[in-house]
Image 1 (cartoon, rainbow, N blue to C red):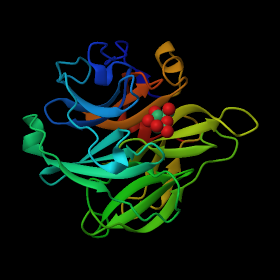
Image 2: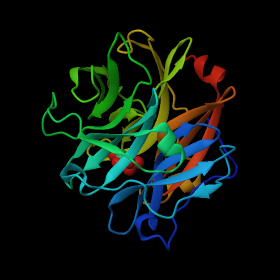
Image 3: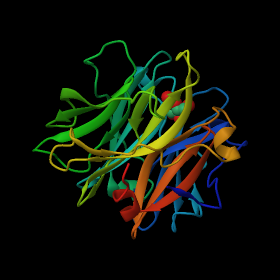
Image 4: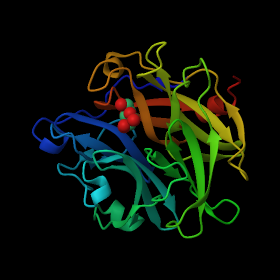
Length: 306
Ligand code: BMA
């Protein structure tokens, strides 16, 4: 369903930059006169930091900053800031990401004024972990993304406590409540083991278009996770807890060498898409090692049946 760009990968690790010498993957994207890419980079210390690149046409990289633009500060993220997602609300960009403390992942958030971001002045406001009291304790919580507008008067956040996708609501973006499961893995399908968000949902007249990742078990013992694939859901505009459609088949799965071989084999994983004209540009990590692009016509995604 998603068609790969022939020029993939669009970003690779840079040996000379220790913080991104081993892999670059899982990127947040924001569109304004081009695609702003905030990506996860990792060196041989295994600590993830976030880098920045810009592409005017969405394909070719015109600018890439040599140093990280965001790195661990808080205790909860001391072993890495992972898998960013960007959502614009008003004149600010909100970045949700997984803070890793060496043991567990936490949903963390930061924000920045759009004008500072565009000037590459990294004046982040940090919120730390925004979901400190989980409905299910002692589990990872990650793969969080914000809806771009309030729903029923409140901010809404999608996140993943394994193996399910949850939603939570807030009046002030700091305190979150009403945690509910909106989607679960499906037995004997490509998303049987665990599921999680792709990028922030995109508003369309048919509903919220929501790309997600699904993981299969490696074998029948159901002990180890296997292949990561991407699928699509359509969520009700006024009540995103209602899943109107969920693809039975993946829209992208590892097939190319750069998806099958790398730091983690058999992975395609997205943290963000942008709409350019009538096409959805999906930026994704291949085998947790490189950053790639695949596209589809928005209407084709919306008219998927099964
Ligand atoms: C998930 C996350 C992603 C990664 C994926 C595959 O748990 O850590 O960052 O791409 O595993 O390794």
